[in-house]
Length: 238
Image (cartoon, rainbow, N blue to C red; front, side):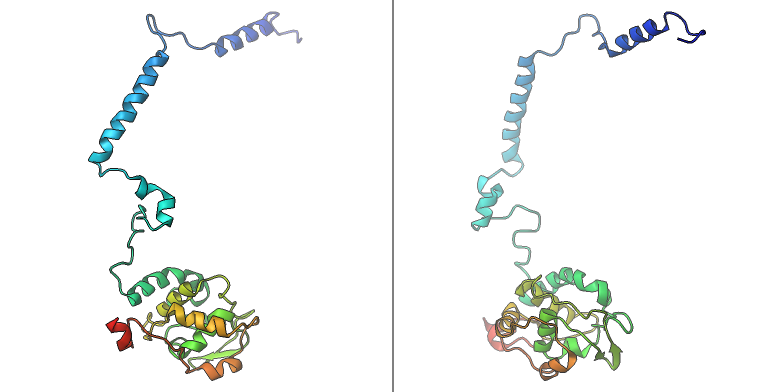
């Protein structure tokens, strides 16, 4: 102990610490709420909620139960049930394709202009508005090496990676329909059935080259076009 320390300083500190740990005294005539009162308040809240439920539109186990949703019941999430019920197939594909394009925009940019020398443009591209079979094969299996788009040369480092394993046939169809009809482009929609047909026929495991895809440059995958530019009469009547 130092020469200047008070002989009782250690005891005083210990006493003060003990006082700080003590809970504050309740005001005179105050008592903790009894357990039965807490239980009663909880019961009242439950009953009140049950009464307010019907007033607010009601509650149904069939609506909120996720298992009934999987079995075909209504999805209670905002905008989930019938989200595209009023849209024709083309408009619905465009709407969903706009969201799916996020994975493409990092390279081809949000405006579809790409980056000079590296990532080719989608806006005004003959690769996009040309034959649907070449476009589906590019996205399904990828593309590597030098290519020419709108008269300009591009050579993406590592090439364009395949998206067939990462996206469903429907998702790919939506994105391809979107890019064929955005930034001034106009083309027939690509359906899930068209994408699936190419998948079933072509089991390629490597990326394409421009030369290999040349035979498909102007070839369209057969199938009904339900809506949008070039919609077939049979699909429109249906």
